[in-house]
Length: 228
View 1 (cartoon, rainbow, N blue to C red):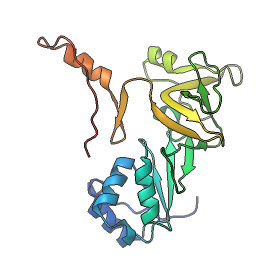
View 2 (tube, rainbow, N blue to C red):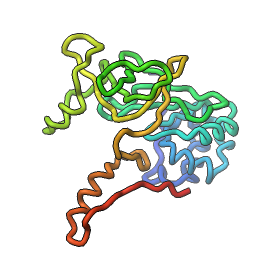
View 3 (cartoon, one colour):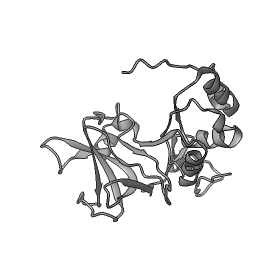
View 4 (cartoon, rainbow, N blue to C red):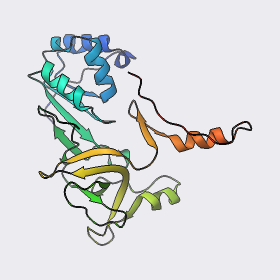
């Protein structure tokens, strides 16, 4: 839209913080998009204050820790930090939040983008009041039509929208959120056993099912550890 130049790093550079740092400095990059876990590695392993050309850092793909957001804003005083949220089923990002200090206990996922509605509902699809946790449902123009060749999963996740026009649908995210008094949303947890690892969805129940098929395994439980 604005005629910006795209700087493409060489293959595999995106996995190495020092090489990302060098590319930003050499190419005078102004905008960069990180998965939060990679931003953490980038901020820990390089001197990000050298990246004076950066005007905005965008994060999405997994929860953005408040401590990390605070550290980046403290170090990069002239750089904006934006937290985006959204699943693939809704054309990726559906909400945005420009981080401000102090960030607080949790980094908000913010407000809906244009033509998207975000509903916090109970198990009966009733809207919940401010401050009461519930499941996040998405509605609006960004929703996908279906899962390819998965009519069962489509019916489970893409449900009728009682809050919209007749025939419209909502997408059940499986994410537990709450709405704050100013309207912004905060992500709390998953309502199932799905986890995010480096921005990738991992279904722990699917791993358990495979383990349980082994002759020497009677029952299994899989959990994700955060090694820091």
